[in-house]
Image 1 (cartoon, rainbow, N blue to C red):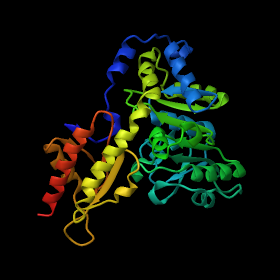
Image 2: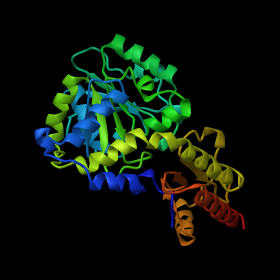
Image 3: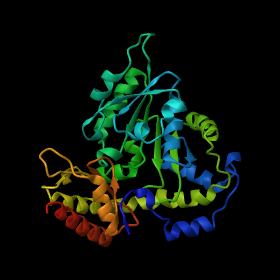
Image 4: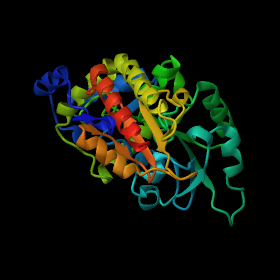
Length: 350
């Protein structure tokens, strides 16, 4: 099977498996795992921060950050399709006692002009804004990239408003690759940044939360409360070190493969709606057209048909389909998948 459902399906590289097998370990809850300690130190250095913490999942990293920056009864401003809203099990409410204040933005790119009107008025009988949370790349907007000048406007605005700002940077290395800038520069104005080792970077498990020393000290408390104390986690951190230092170098390959798939879809405009120019990273999202005017095609049936032909993809709505490219699907596999997708799209015109 050619698996394009997500970049979370990657398997550890041979180098990762070797490093995991020989990793030096200790008890990380006692801060005695040397491999975890090294990963946390080096992740902080890559992002130009004082400290970082290794967490099992990106969701845990994001939710720890929200808890760090807010108080119960506050609001968190985020984009209307953001991961912290739709895919983190309402933990913003359950763990931090906060409400999402959503703002719809074209292609998922929040700007200060979007955010400023959503900030709660400074009156005692209105819930106050506690945090602004931004996502880069934006998963459900199709892996779109927020450029540095947009972030600079957000950083300046939130500083003036006295608000912290968090980045869900699950795929921030994809964004940095697309923009040709370092992750440290692209994220320098955020109070905290979460990034995943287990998506495009290919590690089997784990994410990092980076920030100030004080913030990460508090984050350890919240990680423990969420069950994230993993003891001899150096086995996982060993793979994370390779993901951090080696895997960003090849992300441009995934981006090129995504564009290949997008071009294949765009070649069938009667049955599929996509603009390949909007495919900036490793995610391709398109809408199936129905036979009746202004109707949509059946995404679930389309994904089932592709599965029968050896290609796994995701239906992300009644009419929308998502492909995600990654390390485990090389150029040849993507070319084969593109041919199968083209064939299936042509079948819809029959």
